[in-house]
Image 1 (tube, rainbow, N blue to C red):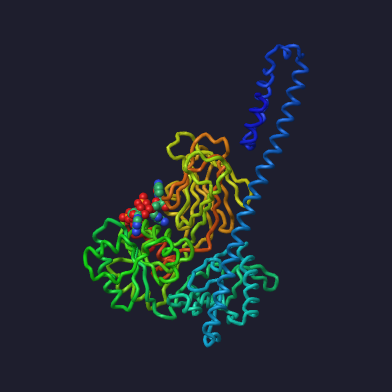
Image 2: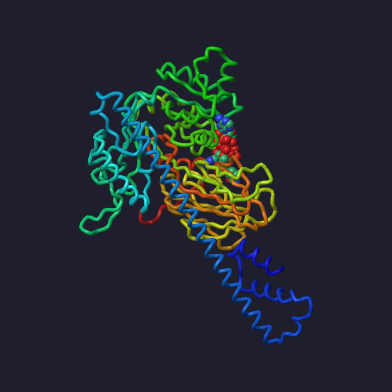
Amino acid sequence: MEVAQILIGLTSSPNRLEHGKIENLAIRSQRLDSDGVGAMITNRDEKNHLSEFSDALQTVAKALEDVAVKKALAQDEAAQWKHKYELELLRNSQLERSIASRALDSSRQDNLSVTSVISEGDIDATEFRSSPQNTQTRSNGYLQYKETIQNSKVLSYSPDLFNNLYLDTQLDSKISEKASFTLTLDPVDERRKEQNHDLVSFDDGDINAEVRSNKQIALVWNSSPASVFILLKPNAAAVQQLCEEMVWWLREQNVTKIYVEPRVKAELMEENADFEFIQTCETEKQLVTINKSVDLVITLGGDGTMLWAASLFKGPMPPLVAFSMGSLGFMTKFQSSMYRESLQAIMKGPAYITLRHRLHCQIIRHDRETDDNTSSESAEYLVLNEVSIDRGMSSALSNLECFCDGHFVTIVQGDGLIISSPSGSTAYSLAAGGSVVHPQVPGILFTPICPHSLSFRPLILPDYVTLRVQLPLNCRGQAWASFDGKGRQQLWGGDALIVRMSEWPVPAVCEKESSGDFLRSVRESLHWNRRNIQLADERPSPSH
Ligand SMILES: NC(=O)c1ccc[n+]([C@@H]2O[C@H](COP(=O)([O-])OP(=O)(O)OC[C@H]3O[C@@H](n4cnc5c(N)ncnc54)[C@H](O)[C@@H]3O)[C@@H](O)[C@H]2O)c1
Ligand SMILES: Nc1ncnc2c1ncn2[C@@H]1O[C@H](COP(=O)(O)OP(=O)(O)OP(=O)(O)O)[C@@H](O)[C@H]1O
């Protein structure tokens, strides 16, 4: 009976089996013999017996640990294959749509020029990310892409594609209602203009990585943006007032379609029935397709409103202009008092874009009989800041087993863990002691919350890894996952959270280039390294 319990214990958490523990268990198992037979065993026999038993248990533990690691690897691999499959489906459907559009309008054939996986105005980050593995994937994808171009004869190709031109969505305006635009890499440094696309080049056998930081993106409209989606922080009179003013002004600028949330439309209509022309997304289904009809998203509020806006787009999203009407405004760089000048400049173009990468999170439930209402289906989320796993109301330490691309990383024992994007590095992760990371640095932050350890420093991992956080089957406490601080989900023993970089970033419009905005926010919003300047020496030095 007790041996069975020991084995159940091992099965549920093989990683935590220690030699001392095994010996204790073995000593306890010796007491199984309550009928007195055990008393007849000599000391030597007893020792041999215990040592054999201990060896056997260690073999079992090793085998179970191997099984656990193999299971984690298999699940990671399955998640990656699923992801690849979904990407393939997406690419195929985009190709089919472009072929359909050709049939619709053959006269436009010669003018079409699509230069990346992006079509119909969907901004996809795959081509803008930089990491050793991505370089590999990217160049593979690029070669396949060239083949597609040759085979389909629909798309034009330019050799300096990656220096000058990334995205040209002249394609398909019949299917998509959006204004077309071009995204270019705007060389911050003129000297880098001539360099080719490869992140790592092998000229003369010398390995170099010269274009690594040539990442400023400029958006040039091919036709004027004519449809915007305005999102507002709720319960703020000043915000609503500005929205009313902005709506009339946008109408004057020939913006023909203005969308707001249903709540906002009701509030505006209460003020003035003339707002009848404003459109709204009533249903989830409309929200899913709104990316296809909106050229610009405008937020009026703080960082929370920007997070809210991002959460509505569960796939590609249009460029976002965030006007600051909150208290901190780390990511909301446009002054609301200057909205006319800012929007005029952005709608004229070029608009400078910071691709704020999002994390794709998936909860995979362990097969179990659910005696509550918790769904055992896997759920998926896109987060701009972070996914955090905390201990909820439980007073026990959280216990989170972490794997990176199938490799065991660590067991987090503390209040929890934050897996953050570079954009989220200045939010919760910062409060938990994580590094501040520029949004263009391709990485994923791994920041523990109050770890019960002297040596648990936060990590920054490359953006191409897949992380897996799993609750042991026999965990004592609770665990709750939050997505940008919202949508809390309880995790149970055996459940896993899989996190990887999403291909759908938030294309946030910045003032000129992302570094200026970021550093200004770090200094002015977070008061980074604020200190009075040391007084100069009042007596001039003798040499002067
Ligand atoms: N201890 C903490 O610092 C803590 C705890 C919970 C949540 N949060 C953060 O709050 C976010 C949700 O924001 P909310 O506005 O909906 O909730 P909220 O109203 O609680 O505000 C959180 C604060 O964090 C700031 N913030 C949000 N994202 C930021 C970013 N990327 N960089 C710098 N500051 C940022 C906001 O300006 C706001 O002042 C979560 O994603 C999480 O990062 C922080
Ligand atoms: N359109 C919206 N619908 C529902 N909730 C929203 C909406 N916009 C913002 N929120 C929520 O309202 C809260 C406050 O918004 P926000 O963070 O923008 O304002 P703030 O706290 O004044 O600004 P800051 O983030 O600069 O401190 C956030 O939790 C956010 O998620």
